[in-house]
Image 1 (cartoon, protein in one colour):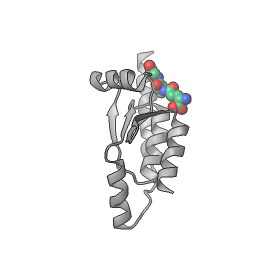
Image 2 (cartoon, protein in one colour):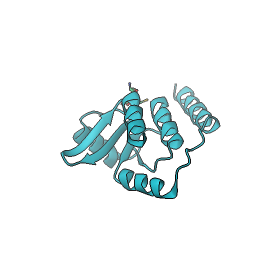
Image 3 (cartoon, helix red, strand yellow):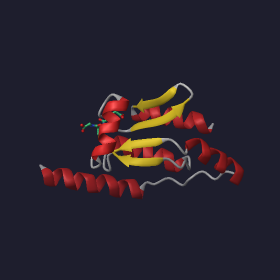
Image 4 (cartoon, rainbow, N blue to C red):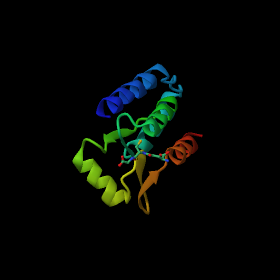
Length: 119
Ligand SMILES: N[C@@H](CCC(=O)N[C@@H](CS)C(=O)NCC(=O)O)C(=O)O
């Protein structure tokens, strides 16, 4: 079972590389402004989670700089996700607002949010 999970993980990561999208090209100033906005955003993820891959590919395509943390291997990030986010589920995007930090779950919801921010 462990071996199957290991091999599946390898295939997921290999396929992620194989299908990596070309990043959008924007004007330097626009990219800098966007980088500033996303500088405090954090994506909680597992390395070989297919839902996380989906979000990572969209982050690549949209050419966003978003810090990624491993919520499986790193106990501190795992704890933070559960306690502050409320659920141990990845992907989860956390970002600060004037009303506090938002913890956004569900890959499709995250992707919709990312697209909106860059529209
Ligand atoms: N519907 C969710 C599914 C996410 C999901 O199932 N994530 C799995 C990892 S692939 C998870 O967080 N599992 C929690 C655990 O393993 O404890 C999405 O699209 O984001």
